[in-house]
Image (cartoon, rainbow, N blue to C red; front, side):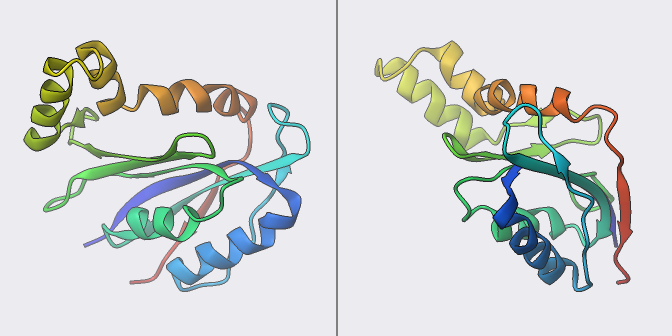
Length: 164
């Protein structure tokens, strides 16, 4: 069973770019050479994106391989397939990593225990219910990454197919 997805590297310092390629290659099991272009939303940084095919856990393995670099902004998506939900990972230096399960219709599916915890925090006055729901949906990550997404419009997408 394979799925496909996209890795969006929204911003990385130039010195980090080869290390990102090595990490991605390690996950995919093949050499990776990304087409890096300047990121106008953060001068001095670079961006790249490519599509991949692989096992359903590929998105989580890519996110795990990249999450340790504090200066990197990225997103990884995986489409749902029979027997596996889709996923979306978003990461920023200020917020850390966000993970969402994506259903077959593209909706974020929030597990029951996370909803219960959000309701409890709101009931205890730790935060408002609207703020809790916003976090569950990844809105803070979307807000921070949106300028980087727009800066990448029209950038080439490169398809990488992993032989499984």
